[in-house]
Every structure is written in structure tokens, then in C-alpha cells.
Length: 439
Ligand SMILES: [Zn+2]
Ligand SMILES: [Zn+2]
Image (cartoon, rainbow, N blue to C red; front, side):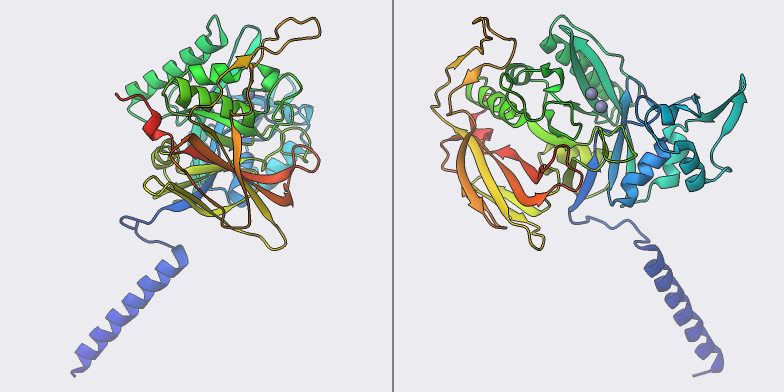
């Protein structure tokens, strides 16, 4: 071999090695074609100083990124994190932050943090999402989504709906009744989605907050497809009370009415944080509820597509390796990502065809009906099987309107919203498609 050729081969070899090393250092150098679906963790309900949260948006995004979340929807009340907004530097501490501005400065530095004096007061600028997203986003690992908590009310009760991947702010649409208000806001989301040519995910928040939304309301507004079966805020009535069912029971009643009577698709249940307080574990602090979404790509559109397909579960700690429903065999199988020292119990819950559909109003001490969900028979949302272990499964006979599953661990949640709260996972209803009205 001539010496020139030898040098040429050597140069090529070195070039190849440099490229490979660069790929090792930076992960995927190219976007992989047709990647296999992966699980992505995200929170779809988050507040910052833009509305009533107590930390800066970049700090909040960093909290979730560092904890291993893959997506985060910033959903402040009735606004988007956009435009110019300055706050007094005392605002974070007024809302319970501990050295909020100092921590922000320490984390991002005074070249990033913008401050000014206004009428003798020190002010800090809230960064809009488009200014800070490239600071924290990372392809395939962490993305932010613009969302809004459309904060409305009807009949003197709160009606809140989150819209994720929104383009323009949606003002609360109002309405005479709870149902009309939910419908008006959902229609506003749909019309923006069509107009903007982008998917926007709407989900009804905390139905038991102020015991505003009954199971019948959830059932009859068919435009609604998602609601929060779990919200980590301690004051949203997750467990219900003696006159109001828990959010899980609301889900079963609503889905039984939908599939059994209205021949309509059931609601999917998501879990969220509704985080406001990022200093300590009091009030609504982060890390309590999230969704795990099985998707091929980490983009807002792909994540929303998987959510709409029901390819996700809500969690307050339990992690799954996988789940599958095979409509041919009726097999609904789950594989839990078991943790050392923890045991798991899975309840398969559903309502059978031919269930007792009678219901009666709940009465107060004077025998007057209370504005709450009716009382239904035990046939509605019945426990069909209780299975222990890390590979629970249930075979549907075809006689079910739907079946869903809740997995409960023996371990207490890392950041419980109430003392002793066990870690759980909520899977979506399956086996309902053959009961829908034919188009
Ligand atoms: Zn709310
Ligand atoms: Zn909220």
C-alpha cells in the first residue's frame, strides 16, 4: 500500500471514531425512524406565579425535569404565560415561598433573572413560556406544553377545565347550569382546535371540588372525554363524604350511564398534581399524581394522540411495565413494575349487562333531596375480581358494559395528600366498544 493510501485510510478511521464518540456523548444524533412506543411521564395540571402558584415558571419546569418527568403542561388560571408581566418580589413569600426570589437567582443567575425598581419596590419579570422553554426542554426527554385552566363557575359552584396544547387563551364561557357550562367551554376548546389545526386535550378538573359536578353531569355531557379521577390537591374532595361519592365512584356511575343507557363511550380518568406550592409538602405540592403515556414520540401531538386512544394510566406511585386488552380473547392483563418489599392488590371493577339501574335521591335530615349524585345499586361499579401479585389479569366474558382496574401498593405515596395514602394506578375502562350506538 502506498503511503498516501495508508494515511487516507487512517484519516477515515479517525473521522469515523470521532463521529461515533460524538453520538455516544450526545445520545441519538438522528431522530430514529419508527421508534418503538415508550412510556412517558407527565403532569397535565400545574400552576406558577403567572396565576396563583408560588414559584417561577422555569423553577417549576426544572422541578419536574429533574424528577424524571417527560412532559409538563403549565395550566394557570384563565391566562397563558405570554407577554410582559412583572411581580413584586414579595409576592412569592406572600404565597408561602421560602426565599423564592433568592432561590430563583441562585439557580439561574442574575444574567437570566430580570429585575427592576418600580415606585421604590423591587420587581421581578415572569418569563413567558416561549422565552424559557428552550432553556429546559430536551428532545426525547422533556417538553413543555402550553395549557390553561379555564376557570369558570355555574350555579355558584366551580367548573374548571384544563385545555392542553392551547394556542390562544379561552375566556370562561359561562352557562346557566353546570352541564351547559362544561359543554360551552368544551365547545370553545374544540372550535379553537379546528381553527388552529392542532389537537387540544380538554379534561374536566376535580369534579368533587365544592362538590360541583355530579356523576350524572359527568355522564350526560358527552363532549367530555377526560376527567381527573385523582388530583393531588388535598381540598378537592377525592374521597367524597357521606353525601357525595368519591371520584372513583363518580367514574363508575358516569361510565355505567354512558355505556349502559346512552350507548356512548366512557370517560377516561387521569391523575394530576394541580400543584401550587413548591416549598415543602403542605397544600397542593408537586409529585402526587401523573399520567404515564405510551407513545412513539415525545411531542405534544403524539402524547395527546395516545391519551385519546386510552393508551395511558394515571398514577400516584404505582408503575406498570405494561398492560394489554385483547378484544378477541377478552383478556385484560397488567404487568406491574414491582418494587422490593412492596405487595400489590388489583381490583377489576365494572358493571354487568342487565344491571339494576334504579337510583334514588340523597336526602338531608329534613328528608329534602340534596343536590348531589343519586344513590345507585351495588350493581354499578362492582368489584368483579381482586387479584394479588405483579401480573394480575381478568378475562372478560362479554357480559360487561366495561371493566377497569385500580392497582394499590402496600407502600405509602412519597408525598401523600392525606396521612397513610397508598400508592395507586388507575387503568382505563376496556370492553365497552361493542355496546356503543352504531353510527
Ligand atoms: Zn381548579
Ligand atoms: Zn388548578
